[in-house]
Image (cartoon, rainbow, N blue to C red; front, side, top):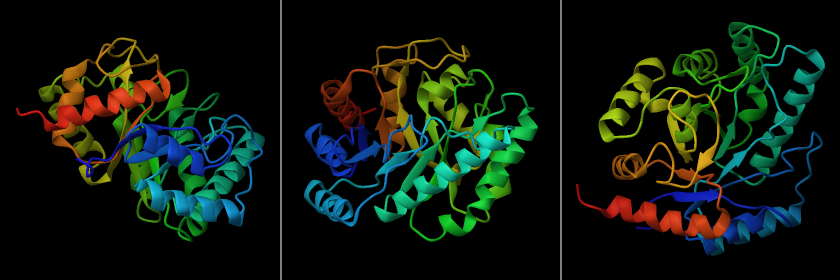
Length: 282
């Protein structure tokens, strides 16, 4: 079942290649990582030697469709000019690191309105992305908007909001969506059964377009449907439940990344569990 692209957000401590080797150890065929400290504005530089070691690790592990996750500090929709400028600069530096490592996907949270309206925030995010058009097109990395839980003033928990951004930006730069299962569930989209998934994906197709779906974060949820509280749970142990993950493993072959709370030992078990789901007969 090596063709199934399933993995987790592994640790790049000590250098990006280490995230690939940790992925191999847990049975992953794809991984997500931070190319720099996600809680610091100042990003790190990727040396030519690290690029060489990264390429060696890719060959040794056969990990495919790697995805980077940008810094949690970045808000491309901030109404504060200073924070917006810092975020745009940090995002540009993240794109450069991804290009150096030839990382296929860069996943990011759209942004937060804070003191502005949702509409103003979405406009600012679109402007932020369009300002990076030239840089994005210099390398292979595709941008993926992550669906959010709708906590606080974050935008992107409604499909319509992501559809607006893709409509504004998608003609200029590669832009698709990463569905986080926990996030859309607590945002109000029911995915507990196959029929629920079909309804939700039909809504995604209507508001965004199925062709713009690029990847999944697979996380169960500690909190209830529509709660807007982002708390991940191990697969099958939360409010979403195992049936949901059985269905998505059988009916979708896009890359899937775990961000569940039990770390490498838990991910190894969950990856095996998800592979078994994919092999089960209906």
